[in-house]
Image (cartoon, rainbow, N blue to C red; front, side, top):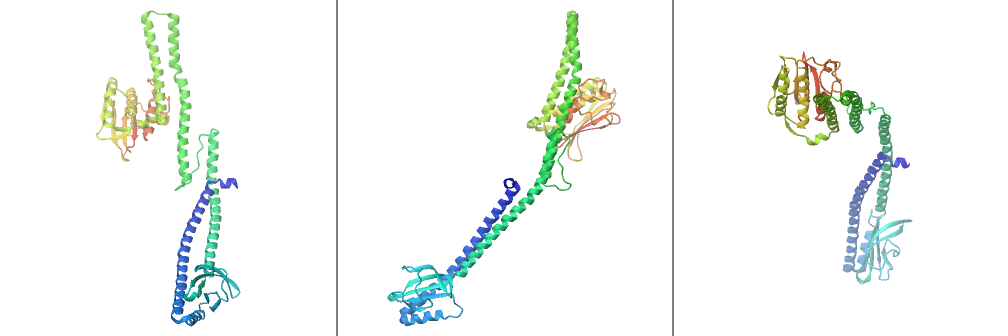
Length: 453
Protein backbone atom coordinates (compact mmCIF):
# COMPACT_ATOMS: atom_id res chain seq x y z
CA UNK A 1 0.00 0.00 0.00
CA UNK A 2 2.86 2.37 0.85
CA UNK A 3 4.49 1.70 -2.53
CA UNK A 4 1.15 2.34 -4.22
CA UNK A 5 0.77 5.71 -2.46
CA UNK A 6 4.32 6.63 -3.46
CA UNK A 7 3.48 6.02 -7.12
CA UNK A 8 3.49 9.26 -9.08
CA UNK A 9 0.57 8.18 -11.28
CA UNK A 10 -1.61 7.26 -8.26
CA UNK A 11 -0.75 10.52 -6.50
CA UNK A 12 -1.58 12.50 -9.62
CA UNK A 13 -4.88 10.65 -9.95
CA UNK A 14 -5.75 11.30 -6.31
CA UNK A 15 -4.79 14.93 -6.75
CA UNK A 16 -7.13 15.25 -9.71
CA UNK A 17 -9.85 13.47 -7.70
CA UNK A 18 -9.38 15.90 -4.82
CA UNK A 19 -9.54 18.80 -7.27
CA UNK A 20 -12.74 17.34 -8.74
CA UNK A 21 -14.26 16.92 -5.28
CA UNK A 22 -13.41 20.48 -4.24
CA UNK A 23 -14.71 21.94 -7.47
CA UNK A 24 -17.91 19.87 -7.19
CA UNK A 25 -18.33 20.94 -3.57
CA UNK A 26 -17.88 24.59 -4.52
CA UNK A 27 -20.37 24.32 -7.38
CA UNK A 28 -22.85 22.35 -5.27
CA UNK A 29 -22.44 24.75 -2.37
CA UNK A 30 -23.01 27.73 -4.62
CA UNK A 31 -26.13 26.14 -6.14
CA UNK A 32 -27.39 25.18 -2.69
CA UNK A 33 -26.78 28.67 -1.36
CA UNK A 34 -28.60 30.24 -4.28
CA UNK A 35 -31.50 27.73 -4.18
CA UNK A 36 -32.06 27.63 -0.43
CA UNK A 37 -31.59 31.36 -0.22
CA UNK A 38 -34.33 31.85 -2.77
CA UNK A 39 -36.62 29.34 -1.02
CA UNK A 40 -36.00 30.89 2.38
CA UNK A 41 -36.71 34.37 1.07
CA UNK A 42 -39.89 33.16 -0.61
CA UNK A 43 -41.08 31.40 2.58
CA UNK A 44 -40.14 34.37 4.76
CA UNK A 45 -42.00 36.76 2.45
CA UNK A 46 -45.17 34.64 2.69
CA UNK A 47 -44.87 34.40 6.48
CA UNK A 48 -44.30 38.14 6.89
CA UNK A 49 -47.23 38.91 4.57
CA UNK A 50 -49.52 36.64 6.64
CA UNK A 51 -48.48 38.22 9.96
CA UNK A 52 -49.10 41.70 8.60
CA UNK A 53 -52.50 40.72 7.22
CA UNK A 54 -53.57 39.14 10.54
CA UNK A 55 -52.21 42.12 12.50
CA UNK A 56 -54.05 44.61 10.29
CA UNK A 57 -57.24 42.55 10.63
CA UNK A 58 -56.95 42.58 14.44
CA UNK A 59 -56.36 46.29 14.49
CA UNK A 60 -59.25 47.08 12.12
CA UNK A 61 -61.90 44.51 13.10
CA UNK A 62 -60.84 43.33 16.48
CA UNK A 63 -60.29 39.79 17.70
CA UNK A 64 -63.19 38.40 15.67
CA UNK A 65 -61.67 39.68 12.46
CA UNK A 66 -58.30 38.24 13.31
CA UNK A 67 -59.83 34.85 14.18
CA UNK A 68 -61.75 34.84 10.93
CA UNK A 69 -58.68 35.43 8.73
CA UNK A 70 -56.65 32.85 10.65
CA UNK A 71 -59.38 30.25 10.15
CA UNK A 72 -59.52 31.11 6.47
CA UNK A 73 -55.76 30.57 6.20
CA UNK A 74 -55.97 27.25 8.06
CA UNK A 75 -58.81 25.94 5.89
CA UNK A 76 -57.12 27.05 2.67
CA UNK A 77 -57.06 24.12 0.26
CA UNK A 78 -53.63 22.80 -0.80
CA UNK A 79 -51.63 24.56 1.92
CA UNK A 80 -51.20 21.87 4.59
CA UNK A 81 -47.71 23.12 5.46
CA UNK A 82 -48.86 26.42 6.93
CA UNK A 83 -48.68 26.90 10.71
CA UNK A 84 -50.90 29.40 12.53
CA UNK A 85 -51.48 30.00 16.23
CA UNK A 86 -53.17 33.06 17.74
CA UNK A 87 -53.03 33.23 21.58
CA UNK A 88 -54.04 35.60 24.31
CA UNK A 89 -51.40 37.40 26.39
CA UNK A 90 -50.99 34.27 28.55
CA UNK A 91 -50.31 32.12 25.46
CA UNK A 92 -53.59 30.31 25.66
CA UNK A 93 -54.67 29.27 22.15
CA UNK A 94 -57.45 31.34 20.59
CA UNK A 95 -57.43 29.84 17.12
CA UNK A 96 -55.07 28.09 14.68
CA UNK A 97 -53.90 24.60 13.79
CA UNK A 98 -51.57 24.16 16.78
CA UNK A 99 -52.98 22.81 20.01
CA UNK A 100 -50.44 24.55 22.27
CA UNK A 101 -47.54 26.95 22.34
CA UNK A 102 -44.42 25.10 21.03
CA UNK A 103 -41.68 24.67 23.64
CA UNK A 104 -38.99 25.64 21.08
CA UNK A 105 -40.34 29.20 20.79
CA UNK A 106 -38.72 31.61 23.24
CA UNK A 107 -40.07 34.72 24.95
CA UNK A 108 -38.64 37.22 22.47
CA UNK A 109 -40.41 37.87 19.16
CA UNK A 110 -38.45 36.86 16.07
CA UNK A 111 -37.57 33.95 13.80
CA UNK A 112 -37.35 30.41 15.14
CA UNK A 113 -36.79 26.88 13.89
CA UNK A 114 -39.03 24.50 15.81
CA UNK A 115 -39.52 20.74 15.63
CA UNK A 116 -43.29 20.13 15.67
CA UNK A 117 -45.27 16.89 15.68
CA UNK A 118 -48.02 17.00 13.07
CA UNK A 119 -50.08 14.05 11.92
CA UNK A 120 -47.90 11.78 14.02
CA UNK A 121 -44.69 12.96 12.32
CA UNK A 122 -42.07 15.33 13.68
CA UNK A 123 -41.45 18.09 11.17
CA UNK A 124 -38.98 20.96 11.06
CA UNK A 125 -40.79 24.29 10.88
CA UNK A 126 -39.67 27.89 10.38
CA UNK A 127 -41.81 30.19 12.55
CA UNK A 128 -42.13 33.95 13.00
CA UNK A 129 -43.26 35.06 16.45
CA UNK A 130 -44.85 38.56 16.63
CA UNK A 131 -46.75 40.46 19.30
CA UNK A 132 -50.02 42.02 18.18
CA UNK A 133 -51.97 44.88 19.72
CA UNK A 134 -53.44 44.22 23.20
CA UNK A 135 -50.57 41.74 23.83
CA UNK A 136 -52.05 39.07 21.60
CA UNK A 137 -49.38 36.70 20.33
CA UNK A 138 -49.17 35.25 16.84
CA UNK A 139 -47.13 32.39 15.40
CA UNK A 140 -47.00 32.01 11.62
CA UNK A 141 -44.78 29.38 10.04
CA UNK A 142 -44.12 26.97 7.24
CA UNK A 143 -43.05 23.33 7.19
CA UNK A 144 -39.47 23.26 5.82
CA UNK A 145 -38.87 19.54 6.19
CA UNK A 146 -38.79 19.10 2.40
CA UNK A 147 -36.09 21.72 2.15
CA UNK A 148 -34.02 19.89 4.73
CA UNK A 149 -34.60 16.65 2.82
CA UNK A 150 -33.35 18.39 -0.30
CA UNK A 151 -30.29 19.59 1.60
CA UNK A 152 -29.58 16.05 2.78
CA UNK A 153 -30.10 14.74 -0.73
CA UNK A 154 -27.55 17.21 -2.09
CA UNK A 155 -25.07 16.31 0.64
CA UNK A 156 -25.54 12.59 0.01
CA UNK A 157 -25.12 13.10 -3.73
CA UNK A 158 -21.90 15.04 -3.15
CA UNK A 159 -20.68 12.31 -0.81
CA UNK A 160 -21.38 9.54 -3.31
CA UNK A 161 -19.84 11.62 -6.09
CA UNK A 162 -16.72 12.14 -3.97
CA UNK A 163 -16.49 8.42 -3.21
CA UNK A 164 -16.97 7.56 -6.88
CA UNK A 165 -14.35 10.13 -7.88
CA UNK A 166 -11.83 8.68 -5.44
CA UNK A 167 -12.58 5.13 -6.59
CA UNK A 168 -12.25 6.11 -10.25
CA UNK A 169 -9.09 8.07 -9.48
CA UNK A 170 -7.50 5.09 -7.74
CA UNK A 171 -8.56 2.79 -10.58
CA UNK A 172 -7.29 5.24 -13.18
CA UNK A 173 -4.07 5.68 -11.23
CA UNK A 174 -3.55 1.92 -11.12
CA UNK A 175 -4.14 1.64 -14.87
CA UNK A 176 -1.83 4.58 -15.60
CA UNK A 177 0.73 3.17 -13.18
CA UNK A 178 0.57 -0.21 -14.88
CA UNK A 179 1.07 1.33 -18.33
CA UNK A 180 3.79 3.67 -17.10
CA UNK A 181 5.60 0.98 -15.13
CA UNK A 182 5.78 -1.21 -18.23
CA UNK A 183 7.66 1.52 -20.09
CA UNK A 184 9.78 2.40 -17.06
CA UNK A 185 10.68 -1.26 -16.58
CA UNK A 186 11.92 -1.35 -20.18
CA UNK A 187 14.07 1.71 -19.47
CA UNK A 188 15.38 0.13 -16.26
CA UNK A 189 16.32 -3.13 -18.00
CA UNK A 190 18.10 -1.32 -20.80
CA UNK A 191 19.87 0.99 -18.38
CA UNK A 192 21.00 -2.01 -16.30
CA UNK A 193 22.47 -3.68 -19.39
CA UNK A 194 24.27 -0.46 -20.30
CA UNK A 195 25.66 -0.14 -16.76
CA UNK A 196 26.98 -3.70 -17.08
CA UNK A 197 28.97 -2.62 -20.15
CA UNK A 198 26.68 -3.24 -23.14
CA UNK A 199 27.00 0.24 -24.64
CA UNK A 200 25.27 -0.86 -27.84
CA UNK A 201 21.89 -1.28 -26.10
CA UNK A 202 19.25 1.38 -26.81
CA UNK A 203 15.86 2.19 -25.35
CA UNK A 204 12.92 0.84 -27.41
CA UNK A 205 10.65 3.32 -29.19
CA UNK A 206 7.31 2.88 -30.89
CA UNK A 207 6.65 3.40 -34.56
CA UNK A 208 4.68 6.42 -35.66
CA UNK A 209 3.88 9.39 -33.41
CA UNK A 210 5.34 8.66 -30.00
CA UNK A 211 4.37 9.73 -26.51
CA UNK A 212 6.47 11.44 -23.85
CA UNK A 213 8.30 8.18 -23.08
CA UNK A 214 9.29 7.86 -26.74
CA UNK A 215 10.56 11.44 -26.77
CA UNK A 216 12.56 10.70 -23.63
CA UNK A 217 13.87 7.45 -25.17
CA UNK A 218 14.98 9.30 -28.33
CA UNK A 219 16.86 11.89 -26.26
CA UNK A 220 18.47 9.21 -24.08
CA UNK A 221 19.41 7.14 -27.14
CA UNK A 222 21.05 10.19 -28.67
CA UNK A 223 22.96 10.71 -25.44
CA UNK A 224 23.98 7.03 -25.43
CA UNK A 225 25.16 7.32 -29.04
CA UNK A 226 27.34 10.24 -28.04
CA UNK A 227 28.66 8.40 -24.97
CA UNK A 228 29.41 5.27 -27.01
CA UNK A 229 31.15 7.36 -29.62
CA UNK A 230 33.25 9.10 -26.96
CA UNK A 231 34.12 5.82 -25.23
CA UNK A 232 35.06 4.14 -28.49
CA UNK A 233 36.99 7.22 -29.52
CA UNK A 234 38.82 7.15 -26.20
CA UNK A 235 39.69 3.50 -26.65
CA UNK A 236 40.81 4.04 -30.22
CA UNK A 237 42.76 7.09 -29.23
CA UNK A 238 44.49 5.26 -26.40
CA UNK A 239 45.58 2.46 -28.70
CA UNK A 240 46.54 4.89 -31.43
CA UNK A 241 48.58 7.06 -29.06
CA UNK A 242 50.46 4.04 -27.85
CA UNK A 243 51.12 3.01 -31.46
CA UNK A 244 51.77 6.38 -33.17
CA UNK A 245 53.79 7.98 -30.41
CA UNK A 246 56.02 4.96 -30.03
CA UNK A 247 57.87 5.70 -33.26
CA UNK A 248 58.79 9.38 -32.67
CA UNK A 249 59.59 8.73 -29.02
CA UNK A 250 61.73 5.72 -29.93
CA UNK A 251 63.52 7.79 -32.58
CA UNK A 252 64.04 10.60 -30.09
CA UNK A 253 65.44 8.23 -27.50
CA UNK A 254 67.68 6.57 -30.08
CA UNK A 255 69.15 9.92 -31.21
CA UNK A 256 69.75 11.10 -27.66
CA UNK A 257 71.31 7.75 -26.70
CA UNK A 258 73.49 7.87 -29.79
CA UNK A 259 74.64 11.36 -28.82
CA UNK A 260 75.59 10.11 -25.38
CA UNK A 261 77.54 7.17 -26.78
CA UNK A 262 79.23 8.83 -29.78
CA UNK A 263 79.69 12.34 -28.39
CA UNK A 264 80.14 13.79 -31.92
CA UNK A 265 81.52 17.16 -32.86
CA UNK A 266 79.42 20.25 -32.25
CA UNK A 267 78.08 20.56 -35.80
CA UNK A 268 76.92 16.95 -35.94
CA UNK A 269 75.53 17.18 -32.41
CA UNK A 270 73.51 20.26 -33.34
CA UNK A 271 72.06 18.44 -36.34
CA UNK A 272 71.08 15.51 -34.13
CA UNK A 273 69.52 17.89 -31.60
CA UNK A 274 67.59 19.62 -34.40
CA UNK A 275 66.16 16.26 -35.53
CA UNK A 276 65.29 15.45 -31.92
CA UNK A 277 63.47 18.78 -31.62
CA UNK A 278 61.50 17.88 -34.76
CA UNK A 279 60.49 14.61 -33.14
CA UNK A 280 59.38 16.51 -30.02
CA UNK A 281 57.40 18.92 -32.22
CA UNK A 282 55.61 15.97 -33.80
CA UNK A 283 54.66 14.65 -30.36
CA UNK A 284 53.50 18.10 -29.22
CA UNK A 285 51.48 18.50 -32.43
CA UNK A 286 49.72 15.19 -31.80
CA UNK A 287 48.92 16.08 -28.20
CA UNK A 288 47.65 19.53 -29.18
CA UNK A 289 45.38 17.96 -31.79
CA UNK A 290 44.05 15.46 -29.24
CA UNK A 291 43.41 18.18 -26.68
CA UNK A 292 41.60 20.24 -29.30
CA UNK A 293 39.47 17.23 -30.25
CA UNK A 294 38.62 16.62 -26.59
CA UNK A 295 37.65 20.26 -26.19
CA UNK A 296 35.43 20.07 -29.28
CA UNK A 297 33.78 16.84 -28.16
CA UNK A 298 32.97 18.36 -24.75
CA UNK A 299 31.01 21.18 -26.42
CA UNK A 300 32.83 23.91 -24.48
CA UNK A 301 33.63 25.80 -27.67
CA UNK A 302 29.94 26.52 -28.25
CA UNK A 303 30.18 29.36 -25.74
CA UNK A 304 32.48 31.18 -28.15
CA UNK A 305 30.11 31.04 -31.13
CA UNK A 306 29.66 34.25 -33.09
CA UNK A 307 28.61 35.36 -36.56
CA UNK A 308 31.33 34.18 -38.97
CA UNK A 309 31.83 35.75 -42.40
CA UNK A 310 32.70 32.64 -44.44
CA UNK A 311 33.96 34.38 -47.63
CA UNK A 312 36.61 36.20 -45.60
CA UNK A 313 37.48 32.98 -43.76
CA UNK A 314 38.04 30.89 -46.93
CA UNK A 315 39.92 33.74 -48.64
CA UNK A 316 42.34 33.90 -45.70
CA UNK A 317 42.76 30.10 -45.81
CA UNK A 318 43.38 30.17 -49.58
CA UNK A 319 45.98 32.92 -49.19
CA UNK A 320 47.75 30.91 -46.50
CA UNK A 321 47.86 27.59 -48.44
CA UNK A 322 48.30 28.90 -52.00
CA UNK A 323 52.14 28.96 -51.71
CA UNK A 324 52.12 25.38 -50.43
CA UNK A 325 49.95 24.20 -53.32
CA UNK A 326 51.97 26.14 -55.91
CA UNK A 327 55.18 24.66 -54.50
CA UNK A 328 53.87 21.26 -55.71
CA UNK A 329 53.39 22.72 -59.19
CA UNK A 330 49.59 22.87 -58.80
CA UNK A 331 47.21 25.82 -58.53
CA UNK A 332 44.56 26.84 -56.03
CA UNK A 333 41.20 28.04 -57.37
CA UNK A 334 38.85 29.93 -55.02
CA UNK A 335 35.09 30.26 -55.57
CA UNK A 336 33.55 32.30 -52.73
CA UNK A 337 30.43 34.45 -53.20
CA UNK A 338 29.84 37.20 -50.67
CA UNK A 339 27.15 37.33 -48.01
CA UNK A 340 27.32 33.80 -46.60
CA UNK A 341 27.55 33.66 -42.80
CA UNK A 342 27.02 31.08 -40.05
CA UNK A 343 27.00 30.99 -36.26
CA UNK A 344 30.16 29.22 -35.16
CA UNK A 345 33.71 29.27 -33.85
CA UNK A 346 35.84 31.14 -36.41
CA UNK A 347 39.12 29.57 -35.23
CA UNK A 348 37.84 25.99 -35.47
CA UNK A 349 36.19 26.59 -38.84
CA UNK A 350 39.42 28.10 -40.16
CA UNK A 351 41.40 25.14 -38.87
CA UNK A 352 38.95 22.68 -40.46
CA UNK A 353 39.27 24.41 -43.86
CA UNK A 354 43.04 24.51 -43.39
CA UNK A 355 43.17 20.76 -42.70
CA UNK A 356 41.21 20.04 -45.88
CA UNK A 357 43.53 22.29 -47.90
CA UNK A 358 46.61 20.74 -46.28
CA UNK A 359 45.44 17.22 -47.19
CA UNK A 360 44.72 18.32 -50.77
CA UNK A 361 48.11 20.06 -51.07
CA UNK A 362 49.94 16.88 -50.02
CA UNK A 363 48.42 14.81 -52.84
CA UNK A 364 47.93 17.46 -55.56
CA UNK A 365 49.74 16.41 -58.75
CA UNK A 366 51.67 18.98 -60.74
CA UNK A 367 49.68 20.83 -63.37
CA UNK A 368 46.32 20.23 -61.67
CA UNK A 369 44.13 22.52 -59.62
CA UNK A 370 42.90 22.34 -56.04
CA UNK A 371 39.45 23.94 -55.83
CA UNK A 372 38.14 25.65 -52.70
CA UNK A 373 34.46 26.57 -53.11
CA UNK A 374 31.82 28.13 -50.90
CA UNK A 375 28.17 27.59 -51.92
CA UNK A 376 24.63 27.43 -50.56
CA UNK A 377 23.01 24.02 -51.12
CA UNK A 378 19.41 23.18 -52.02
CA UNK A 379 18.46 22.58 -48.36
CA UNK A 380 19.52 26.09 -47.36
CA UNK A 381 22.76 25.02 -45.72
CA UNK A 382 26.27 26.21 -46.60
CA UNK A 383 28.96 23.96 -48.09
CA UNK A 384 32.70 24.48 -47.95
CA UNK A 385 34.20 22.04 -50.47
CA UNK A 386 37.83 21.20 -51.24
CA UNK A 387 38.43 19.11 -54.39
CA UNK A 388 41.73 17.73 -55.64
CA UNK A 389 42.99 15.47 -58.44
CA UNK A 390 45.06 13.17 -56.27
CA UNK A 391 44.70 9.42 -55.72
CA UNK A 392 41.50 9.84 -53.68
CA UNK A 393 40.26 7.51 -50.96
CA UNK A 394 38.93 4.01 -51.66
CA UNK A 395 35.27 3.49 -50.83
CA UNK A 396 36.19 0.85 -48.26
CA UNK A 397 38.27 3.39 -46.33
CA UNK A 398 35.89 6.38 -46.48
CA UNK A 399 33.88 5.37 -43.37
CA UNK A 400 37.10 5.04 -41.35
CA UNK A 401 39.20 8.00 -42.44
CA UNK A 402 37.58 10.23 -39.79
CA UNK A 403 38.69 7.85 -37.05
CA UNK A 404 41.53 9.21 -34.98
CA UNK A 405 45.00 8.12 -36.13
CA UNK A 406 43.60 6.14 -39.06
CA UNK A 407 45.84 6.36 -42.10
CA UNK A 408 44.88 4.71 -45.35
CA UNK A 409 47.19 2.99 -47.78
CA UNK A 410 47.48 6.10 -49.96
CA UNK A 411 48.62 8.27 -47.05
CA UNK A 412 51.26 5.96 -45.63
CA UNK A 413 54.07 7.78 -47.39
CA UNK A 414 52.93 11.30 -46.48
CA UNK A 415 53.59 13.22 -43.29
CA UNK A 416 50.82 13.53 -40.77
CA UNK A 417 49.31 12.14 -37.60
CA UNK A 418 45.99 10.85 -38.92
CA UNK A 419 44.02 13.45 -36.96
CA UNK A 420 43.25 16.00 -39.69
CA UNK A 421 39.95 14.59 -40.95
CA UNK A 422 38.99 13.58 -37.40
CA UNK A 423 39.22 17.21 -36.37
CA UNK A 424 37.23 18.35 -39.43
CA UNK A 425 34.46 15.84 -38.62
CA UNK A 426 34.44 16.94 -34.97
CA UNK A 427 34.16 20.62 -35.99
CA UNK A 428 31.26 19.71 -38.30
CA UNK A 429 29.44 17.91 -35.46
CA UNK A 430 30.06 20.81 -33.09
CA UNK A 431 28.34 23.15 -35.56
CA UNK A 432 25.47 20.74 -36.25
CA UNK A 433 26.83 19.84 -39.69
CA UNK A 434 28.45 16.91 -41.43
CA UNK A 435 31.59 16.02 -43.36
CA UNK A 436 30.92 14.23 -46.66
CA UNK A 437 33.71 12.57 -48.63
CA UNK A 438 33.05 11.66 -52.26
CA UNK A 439 34.96 10.84 -55.43
CA UNK A 440 36.09 13.72 -57.64
CA UNK A 441 36.88 11.36 -60.54
CA UNK A 442 39.82 11.40 -60.11
CA UNK A 443 40.67 12.62 -56.67
CA UNK A 444 38.68 13.46 -53.57
CA UNK A 445 36.03 16.05 -52.85
CA UNK A 446 35.54 16.85 -49.16
CA UNK A 447 32.33 18.76 -48.37
CA UNK A 448 31.94 20.48 -45.00
CA UNK A 449 28.16 21.10 -44.73
CA UNK A 450 27.04 23.64 -42.13
CA UNK A 451 23.49 24.65 -41.18
CA UNK A 452 22.60 28.34 -41.31
CA UNK A 453 20.40 28.27 -38.21
